[in-house]
Image 1 (cartoon, rainbow, N blue to C red):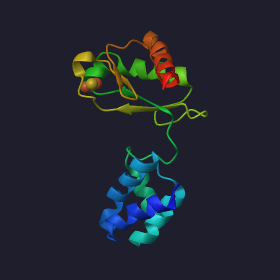
Image 2: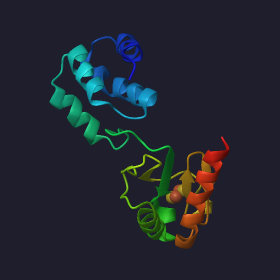
Image 3: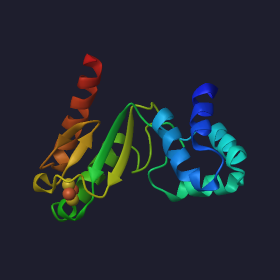
Length: 156
Ligand code: FES
């Protein structure tokens, strides 16, 4: 974590406690998660309790307290995807990765999350790996989709 980058973020927001969520969003945008040291600095700068910063960070699903994986796997659990078996897709992804939704694999290769809707309901059920959208998913396709993402990553 670069102290300079964190200082720039904090300097750009002043010291109003109302800046807490935007500051946390910017820190997460920079680092991919909210490092504990950064949350302590935010508390000092905005003059709020560390417990307040932590409770905001854990209240919003958008915030991650641990580093995310190299590949972001997002399974849609919105209405259209749900009625077309989205929960079975999520089960298959959890089994394949060995983690639950909201977690990251130990090797930091994958993070798995559920989302409300990707806006691609016609393709339901939908999985997005990084920026690639996979529609009309089936539980049996989950493994090949994850394998595709690794091959794509190795070509970079
Ligand atoms: S509900 Fe899944 S893409 Fe809209």
